[in-house]
Image (cartoon, rainbow, N blue to C red; front, side, top):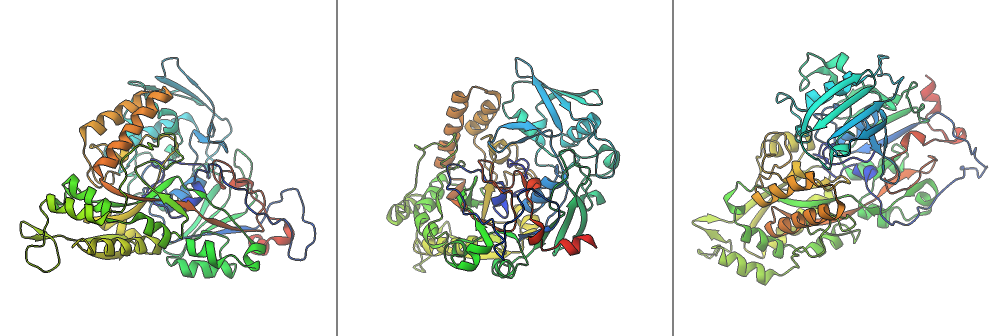
Length: 557
């Protein structure tokens, strides 16, 4: 699966860090241990062969299998295998052609001409053409389409089909993330033209051009994909991709132990203590590297309790991030200071930090007018007690545990915090999308380009958009626009480091930590190469020697 940015993830919201481990950016990590022998110690074939299935576990079901409207990580996982963009990232995080064989960029950076591959077919056999690209673009800017990604494409002055295999886009002004935006999955015009993309049955029975094609979706249970025999880059070796929904991480781990699951993201406890056995070392391969995202406590800034920046800063001093990293992550992560992890070029090492200082937090809260006026141990202001609920998603014990530590930290401040854990789809649909929350714990996976306009610009606070905390800062708005217009790396770096510094000062989120990605894969899978782009950038090249194929017989039926 290709590396993706937050504009292509569906947060995980993809935003979310569920299963995002397979899309993580790797920087300077150690080589993984390998296992290249069969259970009977006989030499294995060295040449790739087709066959077998892979079972991947997720705590949440997909929402919509349509890349331009999907806004959750589970949908993003599947869409990345079913659909292609015009370009993608290679193993070294450089752009390479996907549906586009090549492209030309004008000297002023305003015009990109894509030369599309010939012979590419949709899964139903119809030919892919430039008309499909134009149709996708038109839907991305259609106000009636519930897409969170439209802002990138509204920068376009003109999009045109020059011929069947040539698509040209002209921008109104220089737009630095332009090329990356065309890694968005392309959808088929011949199926969706004239239909309501928000509700069409296509969203449960997708047709793409990717290495895998849709087979079935049993809601709350699994999504099954099969290899695309006509894939333009060559048929994948693994015959079937089974995406199992297992909401409980402990159950998921037991399925891994019993070989009912081949791949999952380990919890820190599982990684550090429960997989350090001969069984796991023989039968699985573990990986560890800094993820390309962060976990945060987000505030509903329309709630009067969180409208004062000084209060949000006080909360940051009151929360012990080190305890969260040690207690929840078992040290497998690092503190977050803003919207970029430390290994990103846009990271600002001089941004304001908030070391744990409960006395300073108390003083700041008192200065902001919060005091225990009635002796009940709870701070209040203008007759309103300082109490709120943190909502997070079911199936992520790490977030729940982080919430519990925050709850205890803030209790010592005189703040009454409650915790509510909600099933994933209800969490997104009923609370996040509708802004019906006071505070949430979530995670973002961010793209390689530091542009995060759709997360922080004040125009992006509408339904299904990603600025769901309702953050608004005119200076940040202007910097985000400047960052999109600037191509020179050092100037862009200064812009995004300034954004980092302002967000660290404003604290619309309490930026908690950058987790290490901890994927584990059954050792029978060969061809896994850990690179800067992660471990799944070349998934269609993974394979299993015939003598180790577990599902070969089932695939033949």
